[in-house]
Amino acid sequence: MKMTRVLLCLVLLWGASLSEGCDLELQKDVDFPGNDILQILSPDALHCQLACTQHHSCLFFSFLRSDWTQNNDQFYCYLKHTDSGKPPTINNRKGITSGYSLKTCKDRKRQTCLSAVYNDVDFWGDNYTSLYVADYEDCQMACTKDLGCQFFAFANQYFPQYRNRCWLKHTRVFPSPPKVQRSNGLTSGFSHTICTSNSTDRNNCRYKLQNNTNFPGYDFEEVASPSPEYCHFLCTIHPRCTFYSYGRDAMVCYLKNTKEERSYTSEEGVISGYPTRFCESSDECVRTSYENIDFPGFDRRSIHVNNAQSCQEACTSDPNCHFYTYTYRGDCYLKQVITVPVPSKVDIRKNMVSGFHLRDC
Image (tube, rainbow, N blue to C red; front, side, top):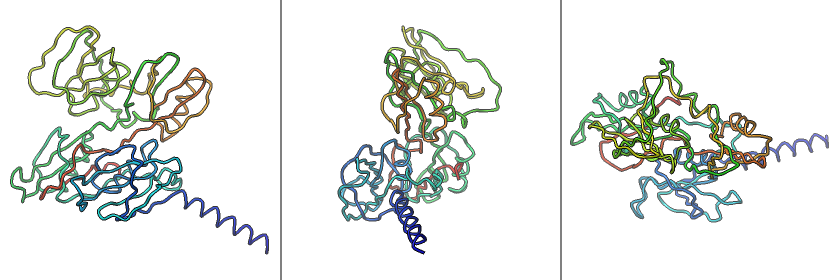
């Protein structure tokens, strides 16, 4: 009987320790001030929590709801970190919802379904096409069926102009390293799982890189890139990209968009080209490892391995690892970035309806 009581106490303590490490509750009108590591825009606290869970070091967050009145910072999501994993200060404050990362929720499937629809909210910008539909449900369905669409905005029949117009929107969510730099003795690369969703059944075709050629102007995004082939891949998977130029010295990929005439100039060290969306997607992100290249920062954890291939295999087997850097000393840094779609601007606008695709639902 005594042994049974001891085992019962151990089970209760073990269950309490698990629940301590996984806090699902969203705390309304509560602020965790300070300790910010990043701020993004979110339409609600659940989106903010998902972004915190995906961020390599975020442990808790505070989100300013649409009813926040202290300033015009509605929809700001503040991602936070402390060494203790807990906010040092907790305040009661109207218009703020706070909560914790779900990183430690081992038995909980990481939900990426963003099914909520936001009335009188506009996801402004990031458009790549538009169409007219009967209602916001049809707009969301159009976004769901178009693999390039991540979120949408719809003007209903009461909007003063563009009634029943549906804008399909895209921002880059492919887990690309935010920084790329040359460094002797390092090898960097990607998880072999992250390109699976970008593969296609279309016929393969060859693409040509134009060396020492620049397509000037019309940039809509600059992305750190370890090679011109990877730049080509980024342009191909972005529905707005109509051509690109890659600066070899700076290792920067310039994604470009225009329906106007494209000009070109001769420029040493610049490589340009066009997307190949009607061909099989490039596996550049999967098959290539980059010697003497560092993807600095964004470390989720590190391990010790014998070689770069073992580091790549460790990254591939870790569902949270997107890319890695291996050092000649055997240190393998597994890295992660946010992949949930983040609108560039979220505004309160009457008779607009916004939301996300339902492919993950």
